[in-house]
Image (tube, rainbow over all chains, first blue to last red):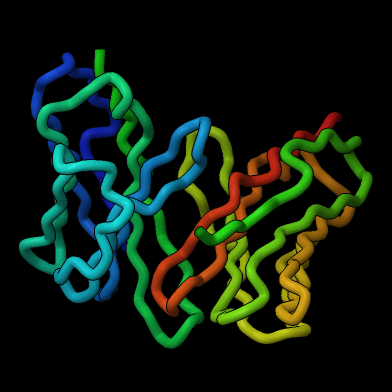
Length: 115
Length: 111
């Protein structure tokens, strides 16, 4: 099993540009989560999906952020337009829920820098 | 707002010593408590998922206990080794699906 795969590993972009982060969850996992990690707030949940359906997007900072999961093996997190305060490490994680006992499996993250 | 508190924020421990740190969480509507280890330049990896009051879990030199009635969990490391240096995160499962993370305890083992 290759684990959760995120791309790109690093992204540097200018303010105002569109940024798309990608995630491939572990095959067979029903849940996919997008987290953002910053020094000030630690790991924040942005949005999560169950069987490709967005369940809770209350953590998405504002309308500039959107996420999709068109199929069970792919998800994107898009920021348009990007701003310097979006600079952070973005993690994707997946889990296979069986009651409450399933841990999250994290990807290696995408480090986003907006200048 | 759910508060998951971890203490201390950081900790320096001499190699060979044992140590422990705390995760505090809401004691009502408990579903599960997760512990993760996060090494620098890597991604968080699950250590334990704990669901029952009084649970004790162990993996090698690392163990954890859970008290859901008072809302805390302890993580213990016995005989610390340099490879134990990492940030240890706990996460509270809210509403059966939504994990809320604490800000972590950064552990540094001094050789």
